[in-house]
Length: 216
Image: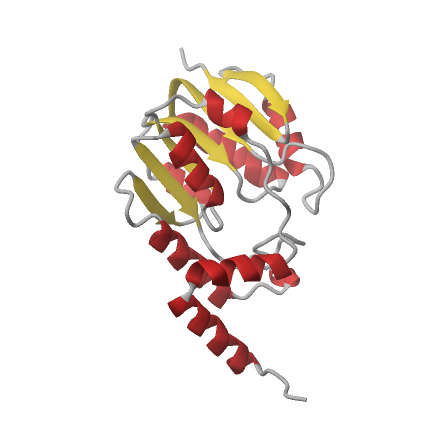
């Protein structure tokens, strides 16, 4: 029986990427046990049409495409490092789950390819904190957070987003709930911020959460 070497596997990945990138990722994520899409319609209905926003944690850009269709933003910043995590215990970017950096590089290229025809979309390959810190204060209407799910990372994302979002804007995100390899880190971060000045908690349903920002 023929045994695939690492070089042979990489050659297949590259060939699939060059000729059928969309099929490559669909097959790849099927075998990685990607969970079914979450209904985020309530959240997208909350985001103002023609607004300016950012998504943290893009992966393949499936929700990015939904945001373009449902929100029709005039500016959409897609932020993701597409980097293998050596510290995460699980998830789509975890080294312990068998993810390779070559795969991450292809995912980044795929997202750039997928949205190349949309001038309102900019792809920022960076970690969320420095990416948000490099943006002008009060320059966005909303930020959607779906990156590192550990409590300290989510807390940092929310705090960085507060500076960037305009008064009356929204800070929203995914995977509010118990459990997961991140030990409910999203929920714990959101719950800890609920009582802070400037953050009006709107809801947490269907694993989505939303705050309205009040700076005055």
